[in-house]
Structures are given as C-alpha cells and as structure tokens.
Length: 366
Ligand SMILES: *Cc1c(COP(=O)(O)O)cnc(C)c1O
Image (cartoon, rainbow, N blue to C red; front, side):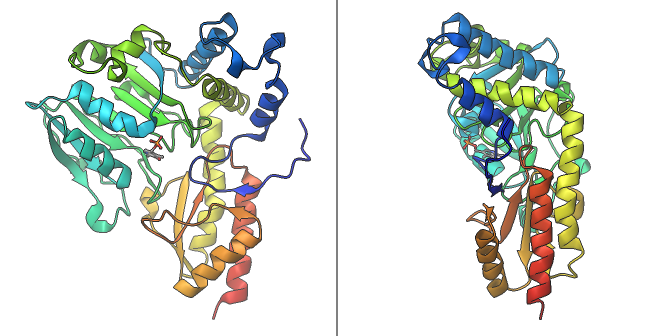
C-alpha cells in the first residue's frame, strides 16, 4: 500500500473518512474485478462474482457481531431515514403504540414518521437539557403492550452515546445505530431491529444495513408496498431488485479492514484512545473549550464542543480549516464545533487536532 498519498485530517460527520487501505484496494480492483475484464459496477447483480461479494459481506457482518442465527442481515436503500418510515409501516397499527426515546434530532425525525402509522409515546426525552445527555435506564418508560421501543444509540449532532442499553423483555427494542455501528461490540440479541445508513462507519452512502430478528418478519403488516416490506428483501437475500452493488463491495472491504484491526473490541479500544486525546484537550483547557455533552454521555464518535467566546470560535474554525482540518463545523442546527472520529479516522489525526487546540488556546487566551 502506498503511504505517500496526502490525506486530509477528515473529521466529517457523514459521509466521512474511509480507510486508506480500502480506498487503495478498491482503486486497484476498480477497472478489472477478479480478472473479468469488467468493473464490479458493470456486472449483473445475478452474476457469480457479484453474489460472492454480496454473501461475503453478509457473512462477515454476522461473524464480526456474532449475530445469532435467528436474525437476517439485509442491505437496503433509502438511508436510515427510510427506516424511520419502514419500521412503523411494518410494525405499528392504528391500534398499537410505539415508544420512542428522544435523544436528538434523528430520534425526533424517527418519531415523526411513526405518527403517520399508529400511536406513539415518549419513553423518555432529554430535550429540556438541550440533548446533553442520555437518559438513565430507570427513566425509560414503556408498556408491555408496545409494538416496540425505539432508541438512537449515538446522537451524531449532539455528541452523546448510550453506554448501556435498556432491557425491554418481550417488547422489541429497535435501534438506529447509523453513527456508531461497527465502533464497538454490541449484544445483538438485546435488539429486535438494528439499522444504520452506511456512510459513517460502514462504507459509502447508498447502502443501509438492517439486522432483524426473524420472528418479527412473520408478525409484520402485510398490506403495504412490496419494496417497503422487510419480508420482500429477507426472502430474496436482499436481491429482490438491483442492490447498490459497489457500496456493498465497499462495505465488505471495510469489514475485512475491521477484522484485520483485530475486530470490534480492538476497534473500540482505538476509538477510546482517539476520543480521549480530544476530550483531554477540552477538559484541560480551564473552560477555554467546553463540551456540549455531559461527561457520562459523551460519544466516542462525535465530539461536540464550543470555544469560550463566539469571535474566538469563528477564528478557531477558520484557522483549523487553514491548518488542514476538515469538517469541524458543528451541525447547522446546534452550531459550535464537532469532530467526528469514526473508525477510519486515524489516531494521528486526533492527536494533531488536540495539539492544534492546545496551541490555539496558548495563542488566543486573554
Ligand atoms: C446520518 C444519520 C441518519 C440519516 O441517515 P441517512 O442515511 O442520510 O438517511 C439517521 N440517524 C442517525 C443517527 C444518523 O447519524
């Protein structure tokens, strides 16, 4: 692998950094895949070469997460945002209630879609606290008769992350894991459905991964459009219609990369080390920088922070950009700064940002 390619310090929130090794391998294989004289993108999704790629990606995902046999792995399109709709469309009715834990803008959007299909309740909300924290497990309220309980495992915009998941017993737990899937081990058996748009940790945009327990497929509503039924895709191994073949290939390569790094436990450790250098720069700044999230709810994937005064914050962002740091502006809905430190962002980039923060403080502290 060439190590001479100049890479940006990429802290984009999504689409975001991909591993250099994966990009270079894709480049090598781009024009002539497996000596077929074709790019993978040019092949039938029913061809042997493509099907091998497809099934390999499913198998690797199952192995990495130790996904039990009673789950299906689906590759869909429409992003996590279409899952906001598909979940209630398949599992909610006008007579039943789904409970949503509100921890940020993405959970609000998910709830909004559910209201179109049935009754909803707030299982908990931290909106009053400007979504600075994840509710404690004791605060979460739901009924045994609920169609499901929905959570957002990592709040990309506010920079908070669940450290422990609720136990919901017979009630199906559904999680939007778009921005922290593949960043740490997860006990899949706690969940009925896990879904994630690919463009944060899994690969390029265009693929959505859905991990769904098989018994739910049998219970799903039937009088809904074919393409929006989970059973359609489960029955066809996600090949009912043309899947995003290149995105699934890239996902498979990202999964191999995670395996080579030592799997999810090793990746989690690296993510902790990466986030720590930046959080340390915030915590050791005597208030020059301050985090948005409360310390116990801090995300290892999206680090949200402010600079003491607004003028200095603008200067910080401008100088950071000048120094080669990309994507540090906070989401347009909350402002401030955000460093997204997804799996593919190397430790060196995080260290460079922390050093830059310390240096900027030295030069600008009044
Ligand atoms: C990015 C993101 C989404 C939206 O994903 P799309 O694939 O663009 O629909 C939803 N939820 C979370 C937590 C996200 O980070």
